Image (cartoon, rainbow, N blue to C red; front, side, top):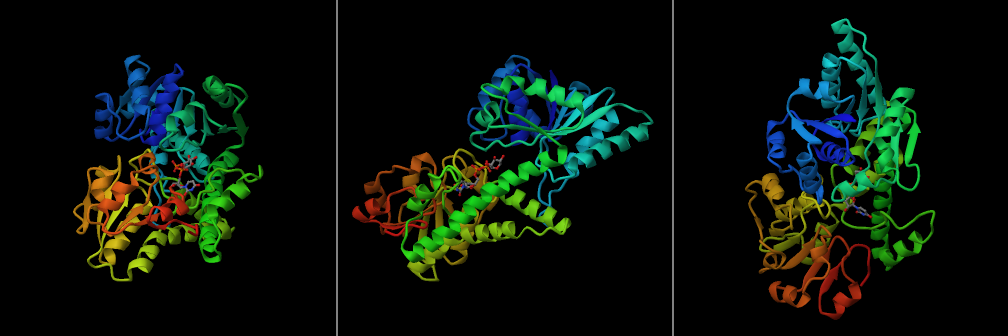
Length: 441
Ligand code: UDX
């Protein structure tokens, strides 16, 4: 099939490359010439394991190409994926200007039946707005061309995006028009390995499904984070509690890890956007408001522990930070806890030396020439003369470090661990002052 993907961000580029991998011919459009230049030169503008190979292979096979030309993009695919950004507005609701402008372009230029697929995470009712925008453009032209608008939310995780797309748990398609449903069924047929993963539903339910999934996962995390705070007070261990409740199949083990708060481009934004949708319909979502508040507070938990240990004035204290990305295997620092921790530590007078395996360029872009913040070439160098180590992201490389080396380089053996990487008893036995989340030593 011939497919156009509008937007070469995480979702667009991964979808385009993976659909090409399955034998489709895909043209990706982005209005940012810099991104298209990188892609045309065989690079990829984001850090995502395995994606470069898929892009390279499919470009070489002639199944994947890139353009900045809207005309070319609209003319190309019978299926037009819209995978542009929906950044939060000032009030937290999703900003639909890029989605609707993509829709208008399609309406302005299409000359035959098209299926327009909303792949971006968009609030309930967006498909109707996309439909109306296209209808409006067709009316301006005085033409009648049939088209369908479909909702097909994406559930991929950064760091595992290619695998998630190629081996999805489910493929949600919200569509009412039988012709569009048939096309979507054919498009996703190669992804159905052992059982039918296609879940077809009405458009509004599909739109809400995406938010419901992310909000549920964020809720689990905030719930565990809050219980972790209680566990510290009552002298319990959140890790043991996690195993104890996760073994109940109704609960399951996933997304029950307490830590220093969730970040990323999805959970914070989608939780906020769903809260706004609730407000808009006067159905206030009390649980989600609490989830968001708990997460914002959780991002301060590490600093609170540091202040409790060293006192409120951190002047003269030097702190090492391991991990800047909002999670491992990405250079993404959107809503990352590290940003809050670094700001809070510096505001309280400390100096900070940070290390991350891939997000350091991104950190430098975000923090610019922030005074009090330096970067280290490797994890051990970051520890030099530091009064403590603070772990913010659970990169694999941090899981089994040389504790003797760490002890030698730190001024004192103090570790604040926002991701519960080590066994507290073991840490105590080898002479560390160890502060995990929700675990009593
Ligand atoms: C998420 C959803 O998982 C994905 O389905 C959706 O399409 C986009 O949003 P992503 O943002 O890439 O994906 O990251 P994810 O792996 O879900 O982690 C989100 C945040 O939650 C990270 O900051 C992570 O550290 C945190 N987290 C995750 C926890 O604190 N505890 C957990 O148990 C799991």
